[in-house]
Image (tube, rainbow, N blue to C red; front, side, top):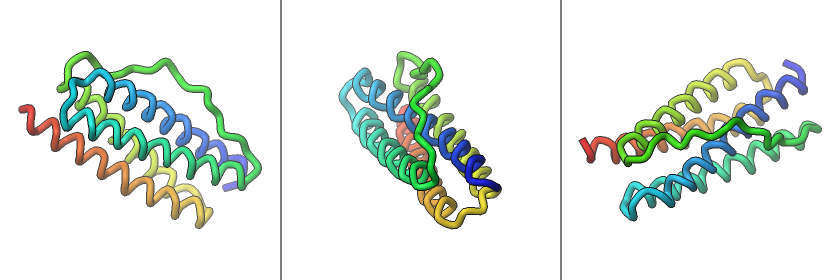
Length: 135
């Protein structure tokens, strides 16, 4: 895979992390003060750290991170629908990172993506625990 293709995939990941961080920050504000709001806030910080790592990989390869994102969906008005949506976002991230790890042949990039993947799996688990507590 050539460098331009790797940069394109990393920018896709960067934008999804940007979207997730904004969604999670907003949701942490609107969720009534509780453990779920604090977990959502902490995970938003993780997503921002992922952006930093991805931006580093992009710029090292001569690219520029893109900030162009789609219109954001915040997942609903009640805690249960928000948590379900956030679980889906994390599942999408897990699937995307698994795919990118499979097709990218840059050792440094794959190492970073594997680390992010592990954190996305943990995020999904954290949201599932909070959802299970509601049901």
